[in-house]
Structures are given as structure tokens and as C-alpha cells.
Length: 315
Image (cartoon, rainbow, N blue to C red; front, side, top):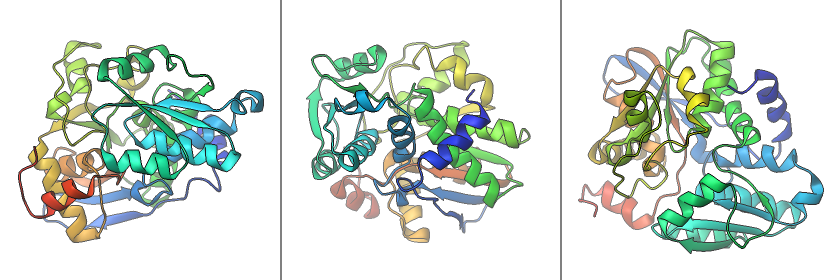
């Protein structure tokens, strides 16, 4: 759990980088009143700017001057590249070989250097907290406490805008977003139910919860590239597991339907991972009452987005 004092401090630290995003009602039929936290409206179109800004702005300036490094499927890469450009330092990012072109283009646009590596090497970088052969301050996209504190500012904003929220659904990638938001909610609104959401093609948190701890599962890469993995990082399990009420998963079809729903009803472009919580909320998995779905990012390949809007099958 991240101390609420650290999350409050992060809010001041990230000012000027991250913006306060709106909480908007999604008009749909069903037992739940669904509200969407639109992190798609951040400068890098995802929540990752919060954690990246807090981590870098609280780090030793001498380390930052050596350049920034991360391992990311794309969104943390953009957050780190954005902060690096602001500070005038380099940003080097190891990305898995299936990373979408839209995210790679965004990294380059922000001045970052992307290095494509096999998924196994990318996963090892997350485990080691370093990228082989690259010098600089490593900004861990998941397990850095400062990153999690930055993410937790989302929880503060949700409670300020909707104090009587019944449940919050959070897309699960590695657990850093969940730990941050859930820490804020548990400190300020213990009654609120908290759920993680993953694609069925790589529901590591679901498997870990069922097994009582991290376990390896079969992972099938998909267009939902920001969520799903072979397993939960061992260091993250004790952080987020006590904070959540359950771990959920949705199908790729449900996720695509949620992408269309957000586009049609809210005129919001969400990537696959960004639509997971909305998919679960719309399916009633978050229960009744006031349900918040965190729409974590909107960096989706234009071709995939167009296919989803047309109702086409996605390879």
C-alpha cells in the first residue's frame, strides 16, 4: 500500500505535466450507473504521465541528467519521453516486438529512442529493473513506489468528483495503476469495492488470485497490448492483492464492443487496455450502484480502431 501522504505529495509534484481529467457519465441501460475516468485526455493520452512525472521530479537530478530509461509497451514510454523532452535529457525505451506502430510513432515524435526486443527480453528488463547495455535512470513502469504514488492521484480525483462511488474498475497491466488508485481509495473510502480487469488472453491477476499467489499462465499477445501477461510480478502481488475485492477478465469481443461504445456515446478514443474496465462495468461485473471505469489510455493503432468501429474481426 502507498501512504496517502505520498499520493497527496505527488499531486503537487506532477502539476504542469499531468492534467486533472474529467469523470463523465456513460449513458447505458443496466443496473449500474457507469462513470468513466478519462485518462485518454492526458498530454500523452494515458495515465502514465502521472507516474513518470512524479518519479522523475522526485529523483536525484544527477541521475536524471544521465538520461531516462524504461521498458514499456508504449504508454509509459511516452510518459518518460515527454518528461525527458521537458528536461532536455535523453529517453531510451525497450519495447516488446509486438508494440503497435501508433505507440512507436508517438515515442519518436516525443524525441525518445525505442529499442525493439523479444517479449522474453522485455519481460526480463521489468524483472531486473534495467535495460541491458543502456545507462540512465530506470523508471519502472509498474513497481516504483513513486510511479504508484503518481497513479494514486487518480483515486483522489475520483473521490472528489464522486464521493459516494460504490465500485472502481481498474485495467490491470502490472499492478502499478491498481496499487496507486486502490491505496487512495482504501485510505479515503474503505467501503468502495475495487476490481482489476484483464483480457482473457492473459489474465495473470485472475490466475494469481485463484492460486493465492503469482503463477505462470499461457499468454497470447493481442491488440489489447497494454494489459495481459505471463504472470504477476512477485514484488507486486503483496502490494495490490490485499487492496482489491476481486480480479476480473473480459473477452476481446467485449473489449472491442467497449471501444465502440466509448466512441459512439462519449466520442472518446480508447485503446484495448483502456476499454477493459468499461467492458467489465457494462457487463455488470462491477455490481450495481455508482461504478467508475478507469479509461486508462487511448493510444490505439488507427487501422485497428477503424476495424473495430466497422465491426470487423481483428487478427
